Image 1 (tube, chains in turn purple, brown):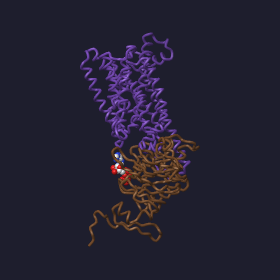
Image 2: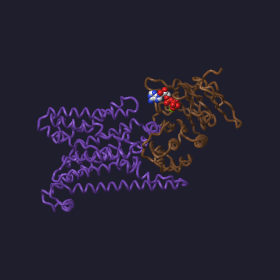
Image 3: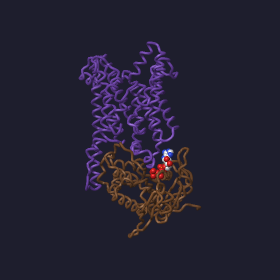
Image 4: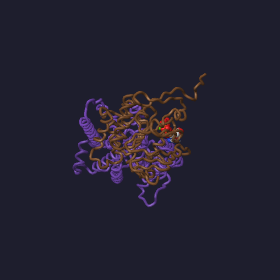
Length: 362
Length: 269
Ligand SMILES: Nc1ncnc2c1ncn2[C@@H]1O[C@H](COP(=O)(O)OP(=O)(O)OP(=O)(O)O)[C@@H](O)[C@H]1O
Ligand SMILES: [Mg+2]
């Protein structure tokens, strides 16, 4: 349960409906403030991300350079505008997308452990990328830069559709089936990736291993733009589904009796999740735990009314990812670690903390 | 019956079940009138919940279910849900919502309709009537079993359906709350002209509060009618396998006194 509910949860005996409504409005205001606060923290983390890096640029120089690019030398300008800014924006966008995808997935599958990562979406993307890198298999007629991400996208999207199709065939609500099939997909695709690695040349192998580690260094203005567009297109539909997602938390029968077509809600949500996750993985590779931890942080702060939970998840994901990006540049001085390694290393303890804090849910 | 009657829920030859398992097998009920509370009773696994889920459009069924003359089976889920609300037997645990949010959410789930009040105002009205206004901002996970049941009832009431199907709404309640809930349900049925079908295991309560009884046994109707007609030593022996007396107490209400379990009873000598 959320901190906010807990604090307001004391019995309010002897109050009339007006007074309770007043308290509820105060609770809503508090949540709006929390979400706004998370957005500000996100902005601060983004700023930190911008001003850190291995090159010899002071934070003041970076900020001055952003305001007036003429103050920088051409190489410095290239660092700020072709490296720092797209990387930092990509971190925010990918963190937001993965966390939103995770929050929606956890609700429709009624499983706090569901995330694009745990259900095989990332593994499928890795396999798609592996095929493209090692065998050069891709969709003909595309610029070569885009073969790997597009292949990754196609496989990630396909894996979710496969999950959906198999779940539809299963009896009952199919929720447990989806989770188990997702785990089966993780193993299957990991095995396939290993097989491709086994077959590949030394050079391709190196490229492949680097790809699957998850790194922001593939961010360009082109793919940052695509990522932003995808998020802007998908998020409004998530927002519109918020009321239905909230009612699903009360149980499938109840939600259906409230007029929610749960089957359609699940399908539409999985579609959104697959687009968000597949695009993210296609551009930055495997980023574990953000899709799992982001929603949990949001839930602890806000509760499960999805009108607040979804925006809060977007913010928490952006914060976690930006901070991971900062850490990837500062943990080992002078070395830029792949951010996927950092999220995994930092994610595990955070995740364990959540598990032990909330024995009822996880 | 050529056309359906107004103000009635008519169930004719209803079949429903699960894959490879027929549960409800040709159930026909006497027309259930608006403003009335009808108790659905019967042993465990008789098919009470299955019958209710079928009536609510939550699982495939064949036959005919008419409300005010309109066939409900085959209606889109949203249209069905606008007329009939089903309160399931259980409320899931581990939900991070407070009571008010969960009840308002029942309205918000399918669009607000034309009601000028906000979902929160409607929810508070119901919580007040159910006597749990004080719990409004309490987290669902911090409620007692009985409180959860009251909240679950409020989630169904707030939708103001024409047909309300309650699956064991008082099984976790103390004596006083059992009375309060049954009184509230009956009042609301009369006020709103709602048709209430409620699963009860306590036959004494069913006899006291229901206008009519439907006794279900192994997916078929075993007895129907007024409490006095449906609850007799014969039906109790046949459906529940107990040796029982049914008597009227000095205040006129039906008393059921169970003497023995027919299956394990040792013949008296
Ligand atoms: N999802 C399901 N799949 C298969 N069979 C089911 C399912 N749900 C219930 N059944 C079976 O249908 C029969 C009727 O169950 P139902 O839940 O309708 O009984 P009930 O009268 O509500 O019992 P109780 O008083 O215990 O709640 C039982 O034999 C049960 O095993
Ligand atoms: Mg039942």
